[in-house]
Amino acid sequence: MRIHRFLTAAALTLTAAGYAEVPELTALVPEATGYELIARCDPRTWAKAGYQTDNTETLAGDLKRVGYLLKLTDQEGNLSWVFAAMDPFTDTIADIAVPASGGNAFQDYVNNLEVFSNVPGVKTGKFEKGNIEFWATNYVAANAKQIPGASDKTFDFGDRKSADGSYGSMQLHNYPEKQTVFSFSNLRAGANCDLGIGNNPSGNPDWTFSKSGNKYKSAELFVVAQIDNMKTVTPFRYDEKTVMEKAASLVPETAGKKLLYAYNLRTGSGFGDKSRVNYQVDNSAQFTARPARVGYLMVLTRLLSPTPDPVRRL
Image (cartoon, rainbow, N blue to C red; front, top):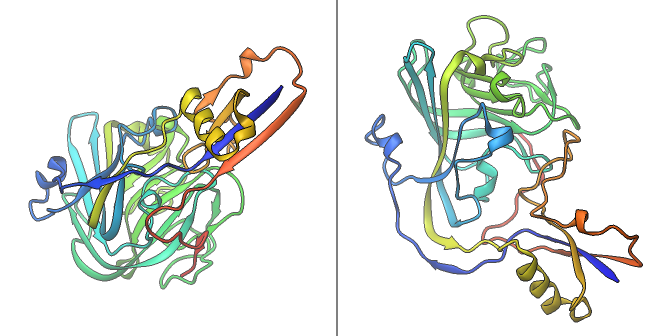
């Protein structure tokens, strides 16, 4: 008996698509038109529940602008929000969402930053530059990239990514104003994640170690983008029949064999924090006897835009 573990990124079928507004965004920022919803989640439940909306594998095209809307409602029902948009820092749509374990990391300057917010003290308007710290690993306070005005001792708008760990950082900064625009860190901590708009008034300015997610009654993070030449993509369907048909079309010798696991290399998780691997198909409970032979098949499908370097440099 030969068992195949099937790994793939996506299968692409393209059709024309039209633009749709994001009503939650235009209700707060009427001029923020032409944006498509890429992903939506509650940062406090993202680790377990994932995205409420996930179009990272169903939209393709040329990124024109990238934006983030974070809405936080406190226990008294008061809404705080920020929307920030910038020129794209990557060519790959999936990379602009919440950093995934094993995914690309970005420590970049961003251009043409624009900020809207109702939070007192948050600098709004247009700025020539800002910077992002997006990664799924741990990090330390050292100002590794020499961001102007950042501290080597305090977690702020200039830190240093570590090679391992799973704390995670999804932070946008307006470094010329010495300000964090928004922060979602400690990505897998559930309600104890680090979550904030503007600088943290006490503790680390970028909200690291604040466990502030539990202060809010609700939280919503919207990842949006303006996309030229946009097309819809049909993601690969992960079920045993489809997977094994795909395997047999590529390697005829796999016909009639049994599937043990199917795993998506781009969206799977579980290695960084040593938790259970997020398989699309897991038939391991069905195999009680020791297999005579084991096989592995990996399929990589290039997306419509070039793949960026694994780690972006400032």
